[in-house]
Amino acid sequence: MFRVLYKHLLLRHHISTTVPTTTTHHFNLYGAVFHPHNPHLKSISGIPENPIIPTSFTEKYLINSCGLPPESKRGFNETQIARLFSKKWHLFSPIGLSFAQKYLLNSIGLPPEKTKYIYLSPAEKPDSVISFLKNNGFAITQIAGLISKDPSVLYFDPNNFVKPKLDFFLNLGASHSEVADFIVSHPNYLDWKLQDGIIPSFNFLKRYIDDNAVILSIFKRWPDIIYFHLESRIPIFREHGVPECNIIKLLISSPRTFGLSIVRYNEIFEVIKKIGIDPSSPRFLFAFRTVAGMSKSRWEKKLAICRNELRWSENDILFMLKSNPQLFTLSLEKRAIPRSAVLGILKSKGIIGEELKVTTILKLSEKGFMEKYVTKYQEQVPEVMEAYKKGGSEFVELGTRDMEGEVV
Image (cartoon, rainbow, N blue to C red; front, side):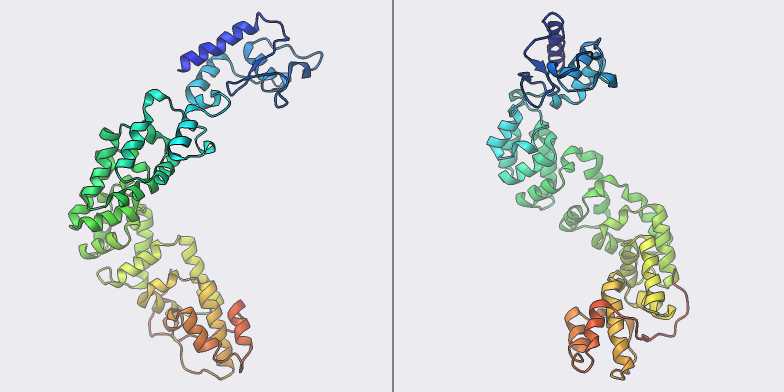
């Protein structure tokens, strides 16, 4: 196709050298033949009386059809045009709807603006792909979504390239509708050969997890699993004393944590060690997910808020992280600061006097805290509502535990 288009373009070059300059048609970058009175094109009459005379067909084309200033001396030579054809063929498609746009609009309702860069010819038999997807549980809207995300699907051999992937997930126990939803959300799975990423990932999971339904859920929750060499992650956990039962639990509950870098793993284990959590304990899972779920800078920012704005002691912070590490994933600005401000006011007024624990305060639901500490005392201490909305300067001293150690 490229050779034919290139010859067609060169043929126009040959004609343009033999036709007077008053020729009535120009070939623009999108391959269409336009009348020179088209207001969107720069006509020959619009060129200055004493222009820099172009010496090549390329310069003539870019000046007359594209409006490129002659003095810029920028343009494409014939070799570059050929390369442009081979890499950006869609730029030379005719004005109006292409075959691909018409076909996809009529068959699955894809609007032309979403398919203007898709090239398709009747010889490629796109009907076979669309019919195959329909017969395998894909709705028209799903097919449209899939093709708009990954047009290369139209060029796949449905029986030899697409079907094996669908069968793989069906054999794991997924329904046709579940497979369709998964593939539409993650069309990159159709680009991979089974043996290159999908089957190796499955074999790895199967060594630790016997339930295919659980394995299927891991694929759904962490589709990028096929890009990672998971086997290299296991020794890192073992080196830090994590038993296999906890490794498996973490793999099931938070599979994405197995995609972290070696450097990041070492940082996480260093923090957990200083908190004082035993890798063999159930709390390790919460701690690992908490630390892994935020960047090092965000972690340090949260600690700074605890120390400087909330004025929590190291023991308070350590106790919270060790007893309920998942609470550290909450927004301190939206949860801890307003609540501490309210409690600080109530304590300064002598309304509450009991020692309050960090975990108790943060665990309360929004409704529970409002009822117990805000609406209950709003008439008696009106400023508690304002403090709750904006935070305040008066914070309660939260209770501590007899622990030593610093958090990093």
